[in-house]
Image (cartoon, rainbow, N blue to C red):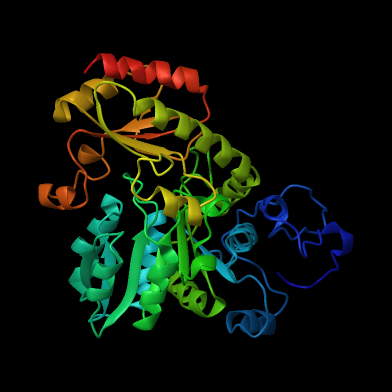
Length: 403
């Protein structure tokens, strides 16, 4: 932003304010119009006062916008707000969650470098590493997420990056982030954590020792299933490399989507509280139902990592997965019998969604890869929205009756 005028009292003083205030106000730099809501800047380029002004901006000698592939006032507001909420020095917005992962690897790894990835990651993440990044010489090995000893034993001399989801999709498996960060740093590697399921409202991996945190903003950050986007956050030193990749390769977040995400962040905490409350009630209820073989939700006392989740998260998230009797056919009958819940693979929406991971989000993996990740044919994932819990129980009861 150029310093052509003094915003004065128009901008909020945010020194020392709390998380919820940051979620509503961080990152906003008001224009001379004095707008109360964040301004939307749907522009591809910017004009300069002189040729010298343009040259100085392009050279990075003076601050200011150059081209919206890598600088835009609305996108910057979103980046600054996420950085404030995650406790990061800087954040960089991307076109999707997958482009955020791509940006991390392309920024910090070269051909011949080694990456350790949790076995418990989103199916497209595995496809990105297996089908594309390996083709360009990046070496990849997969490690059981919760097994710290396995992580420590998997390092090579060329290991540069560890990538994990915690909690994982869709089984809500966790890793001790602080302990894994210590292991990574002892070996000179970076730890990147996909914080999509928790959001900064429930967990802040950077404060636990991680170097990089990323999100699919498409999920809970938006909160209403409206827009695609991603974001990477960390130290300014690390994010400089990510900015360089975006500037050249261009997986850029659109200003309109950034504006939507800014609106989503304003209600993030209260939405996550409601999501988590309903999810816990449903998980506890499902655990008592005939036809359910196993429920995966870290908020349950029966979850093997319940104590770890309580220690490093402020609540247990909105995603409940469970295995039903009857294999794939039983899972499909269960899903098809519902009448309120949406059959779709997206999550983080106000509307509850239901999906069959083995044939959707993880459907491109081989049977062996799915088995390694714990994705069985009878697994169902429910991303709990904001409807009445009684109505959700009634709808899931239709599924139970179909088994």
